Structure formats: C-alpha cells, structure tokens
Length: 445
Image 1 (cartoon, rainbow, N blue to C red):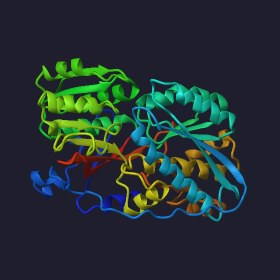
Image 2 (cartoon, rainbow, N blue to C red):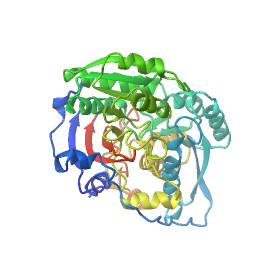
Image 3 (cartoon, rainbow, N blue to C red):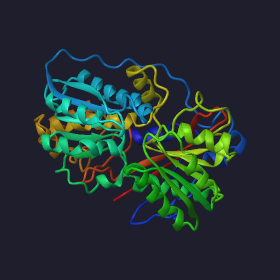
Image 4 (cartoon, rainbow, N blue to C red):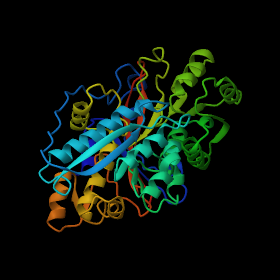
C-alpha cells in the first residue's frame, strides 16, 4: 500500500473522488462518492466536535544522525515572519524530519550526512527572501526548499538559476511557474492552482451557491486561484458577481468587502493569507454575513480558535493540497517541533527534501546541476519505494526508482510540476478549528 493510500484510509469518514483535468473541468467531472456530510447530520458536521478531527498523538523521537562527514548542503527559505508565518513551522518540521531520516540511515547521501541551513522568507512587503537566497548561495548549498508564497519565490528564482542551485518549493501553486524560464532548476511538490482552483469552484457550486463573491490577494497566488475557480464556477452555471483585489500588507479591507456585499452573494471566497484575520471579523461580526458561507484556501486554512469569536467560521469550508497526515506522520513532525498545531505542507516539505537527496544519490554527485537532472527520474517510471533508505537500497542495486511520498504520488513532469495530487476539503466547527471532510484526487497530465 502506498503512503498516500494509507493517509486517505486512516480516517474513518473520508471519501475520495476523482477529478481529471484535461483543458477545463466542470462540476460534472467529479465522481460522486460518499462524503462525511452524507454520513452525519449537518449539525454534527458543523458542531464543536468535528467529524474527522485528529486524535492527539505523542511526539516520536527522530533518528539520531550517524557520525560521518557532511556530503550535501541544503538550505530552506520558509516563512518565519510575514503574512504566511503560520506555514513556516510545519514546513520547517517537515524538512527537519527528512534530514533526520537521511542522516540516521545506513547509506546517507553518497556515504555522508546532509546539512540544512534554515533562513526566513518574510513576505512580499520585505526583501528578506532575496537576502536569505544570497546568504545560502554564498554558503555553497546545492538546493533550497522554499518559499511558501509563489510571489516570494519569484523574487529569488532567477538568482538561484544563475547560481546553479535547485529551487524546490513545497507550497508554490501559481500556474505561472509551469512555463517559467528556469533552465530546469525549479520544482514543486504542491500542485498548480489549476487543480485547487477548479476543485474549489466545483465545491462551491455543488453546495448550491449561484452568486459568488471573491476577495483575493492581487498577486500570482491570488490571481491564479481566482481565475481557475472562476472557470469551474461558470462552467457549472453559477457566476462571480463581485471580485475585489487587495494588496499584501493591507489592513483595511472595508471598501472591498462593501463592494462584494453590495452584490448580495450566496457565498464568498477569501483568497488571502494572514489578512483573513481582518476580513472574516468584518464580514461576519460587523456586516452580518453568514460565516458558514465563507470558503478558504491553503493560504489561510488554519486553526482560528484563539483569533475569532466562537461560531464565527462554523460550517465554513476550505481546500488544502495534499492528503491528511497520518498519526505516524504527525508524531514524527511533533518530534521535530512539539509546538505544532498546523500541519499544512509539512509532508510536501519532507518530500521535497527527500527527492533532492535521492537525486544526488542517483547522480553520484551533489552538484546542483546533477541533482536537477535526476529529480524527475527518481519520481517516475521505476521501482516503487516510499522511504529514503528503501529507495537508496534500490539505487545502489542498480534499479531505477519511483519515489511515492508522504504528500501523494508526486510523479514529476518535465517542467517540475507534480502531475497527480490530492486536494483535501475541510470544514470548520463552532470552535473555529477545522477537520477533514473529503479528499479529491486530481490528474493534471
């Protein structure tokens, strides 16, 4: 059984439906399956005890590193500060988990250990990411995991290409990366928003919403998600009645919210990062909009139990790429960082790190260009393997490998995108925390 199948089946009430994207996808492209909402009543789904809520787990101690020389140096540029700072801890924990697994294995990378240098990405209101990239390139890293924000990654992608350093993001979803001139150095484990946007649009229309408003961050991330959600919404016969952009760092969104509400939408999509903490209270508590008709996405799907009044987001839904972390995954992530409360993109960060290490092993080199040239190969058309040690053993035996990760099957395209992925659909309860309702599989080939 593959890792992603284990993750899906690890929840008692969790359905998987299929969405195959060939050009445009509409609501009828989703294969109907049993969902949590069909198993329990609406009151139970939206109550304080959410269906699918994760049981508490104890941290699992990570492997201790072998005593050997460093043969591969990697860096990370992930958000410690800025409007995506809530994504930083799980992503960093995912990287640290992978590094511990590699350094605790018998083989290591070319017989040695991996060193990881963590740096902050900030957000687009700062130039922290470019400074971090300069520092890591000067330190001699062969690859960098990050950034979380698509727009932040665009600020230093050319710098890494010029330096011959692999750029591997666990969370970039902008469709613009697919055809970006990156000399083959850019990769990601998160699927393009061609997938998440269409699934989001299908979700909203399947919930019976005909008139939809959108508040979106005016950058590559927000625009990409908006445009792809719009395709699915309109294909299903619904319409976008208002779409209002805002800029990163804006802390007053009254004009945009008033413009959207003036069109009397049935539901509102909020394509925001940390700015959601401004938008939601104004929408619900000030303007009286039904919080259960708000739809969130990966950039803001978080636990707001300490931020909003009880019931603010009750029944709201959101989407997040990837499968739900298993109990074992969460235990290992807590072993890397016992303070974690969110696990978004942790598995994608783990996978990005493991893939670069496997590419170096297969290449027999830790040069950035050699890693670049082997990343696609280790994720497809070979013997299936799901851990670093298992994959390395196959490589050392002369086998071609196909690594299936913690985030899903991966199967990298020649342009550095995963060609198949899962999108989780989540719902909020009275306590403003969320839990899984459904997982949707998508194939982007």
